[in-house]
Length: 68
Ligand code: FES
Image (cartoon, rainbow, N blue to C red; front, top):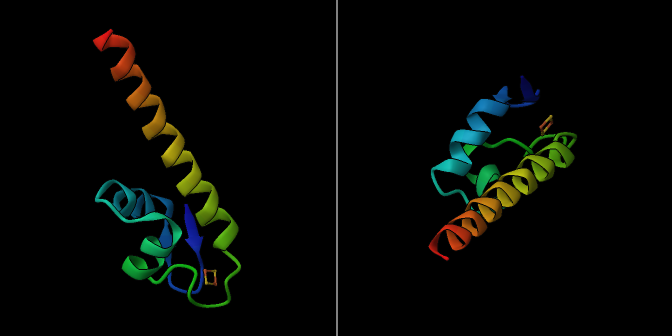
């Protein structure tokens, strides 16, 4: 799905950027330029970053539970 129409950045590209270690919205903007045009996609970038952070947090907690 195309997230940033100004720079033609997809949700897949953003997910890959976050998985590669981009630091939140700012890191995604630096790596992809998404959000650096009209700014209309910034809310979606924030949402994708929040979802990624929540998933990481869940994974971390699962590790803690399994370690026991
Ligand atoms: S839609 Fe992303 S900066 Fe305009």
